[in-house]
Length: 563
Image: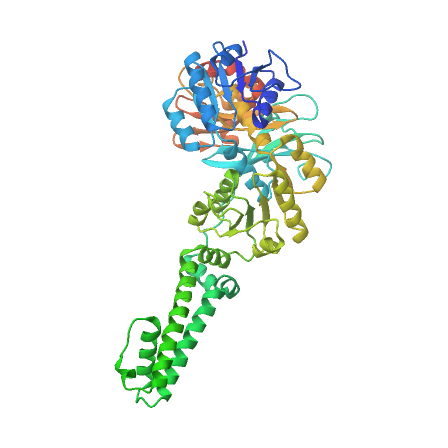
């Protein structure tokens, strides 16, 4: 019997999950706070999401899984607690923006899995900026790999090649195969020497490349010192104040030296600085001086107090205020091959962190100086330009002409399009990746404006939520020709149906694709994987169609016995 799945909160992401589960043949019921034009009861229950009556009307007491897909952590937490009271055994897939809270709940509560739309979507934005037309991600060998679809056409480099030739490459993982004619699983195609034909689809994972370590601190400091243009822009007032102060001191020094007071240049300078700065000096210098020198000293004391006060204020503002940070950030902006991220939203900061971790140079443009992620970003040594990225001067200050790519990820779709269009006008050859919240219009925007990628987090994250709802701990997922597939790991136990079988036999009989196996503290891939006999303690990483996951439901032993 198929499990009953409830999706609570049918916003952009929730409704996408709901439709995807229904498309895959799952028995799914939705809950929303208001009616949805094309949906009626009993498919969608309308009411207060956290109310016991609403959850009961959706069948919470008989449900196997609850997917909480709202955008507010507080409401999602309330729904989760109410659901657990009504059905202590229910499995919950919970959307949380606060990943720390989500991880804590996962450790505390059984059958609770927290997922983040931002965390799922950010890698795809990053991969798109790096030049990979990724459709998703998969965690393999302790890394997050981008996955993309290879559609074999007349001009494709792989046309006519045997799948067996592509199978052995460890830096490229074959994940799923959909032939243009007939049905054949990937492993059978590899073993039989099947050639790729026009119309075939192949899902491939590519190992991410980590760039060498970033430049040393000394080289960064040298770059700051040599970049005088940025200092002139942000420190001009401090320099002007210092010049005026030095001119006042020099005037006083020359006056005392030229007056017949029998002072050396050093003594005159010492007295002038002390007198102007208020630090004191040798008062005997003017005790016996002419009245004109005494009047000059009075004037210099007053002028010096004004000049030194103004200059100290400007210096304090430069060092302790935002000007020094702006200068420091501007001076460290890379000259070329860097990535410009416009907007420090939740997904923006994730993208910045991933690019930085992979060794790429990043520049951030953010309008709000009080954005909570600004200090986090600067803490990574990444320059932040404070300003509106839709302005030509701000984009030019980020050296957009020589950038590797621009990622526009503010929280406003109209603003994103404006910035993206301005970026294209300034640098037509630079790839532009755009965040567009509405999944139904993201594809239209990309087609209309011809950006490299227009991506919707809801569109990217929904398959992962749907896959998790259907089948446990998911390592990756993707969609090929409207068919959802998922990747997961299974531990081989003595009673496991796979125990004692050859991996190639398991793959052909269960319609799954083995990725690699962990056995005896080593990982086996390629032909070695297919010729492995599974034994207790091995961990097999595999993919299979999501339409089969309901048969592998809930208990891993049940999952293993079925397959």
